[in-house]
Amino acid sequence: MSENVDKYIKRNVYKSTSSAIAQKFVDAGLEKLRACINCGTCTGSCPSGRRTAIRTRSVLRRALIGDESVLEDIDIWLCSTCYTCYERCPRDIPVTDMIIKLRNIAVEEGHILDNHFVLANKIFYETGHGVPANGEANQKWRDLRVSYGLPPLPPTVHTHPEAVKECQELMKSVGFRDLMDNVEKIKEKEKAEAEKAEAEKNKVEEK
Image 1 (cartoon, rainbow, N blue to C red):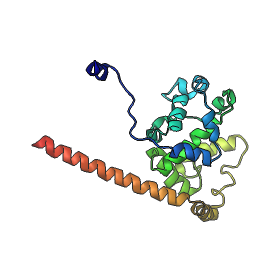
Image 2: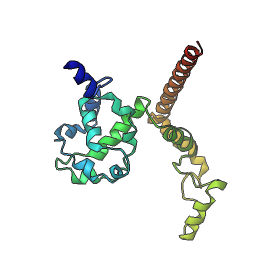
Image 3: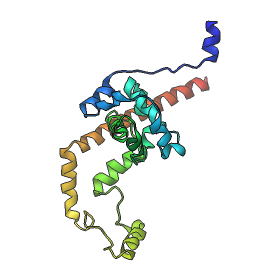
Image 4: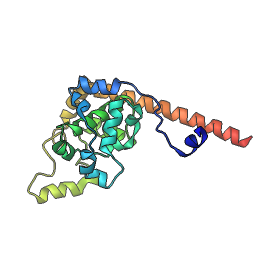
């Protein structure tokens, strides 16, 4: 009987669990996570969930039980932060804020999509803009601004380039630079480990 159970019934196996994630929610003033009744209103209301694999209820449940693999799940990056789930939650749980907090925790642990990392570490830190409007490649955005009667560049670091260093100092003072440096070290370590594993696999196959 037990052999058939193991053969035909799939079980969820958690790589590791701890109360650390839930505790970070509490520390951030988001202890209302524990009031979740798992009704699924957030999942059913999610516009992103209609087009992607994100299941908000599942994400929050995994965070509540301390399933650390949720930090590596791409689903937490599929939320568009529209706040529909927050508006409709019968327990008035700030669901969107919790997903944002999950992303913060994930980045602290080194789990961030490569595109997001490049945007934060290179573009945002170096230019002070998430979406720069200067440069030849962004002429169409400047033309669009002009068509609306706006100056081609916004009154930001684009028109005050001397302020870039000040923005970088602010990012350093709040720990953003240290966070990005830590993520970069983690990614380099993971890349080295992956290359080592691939090399060992090729050696075995050659034999």
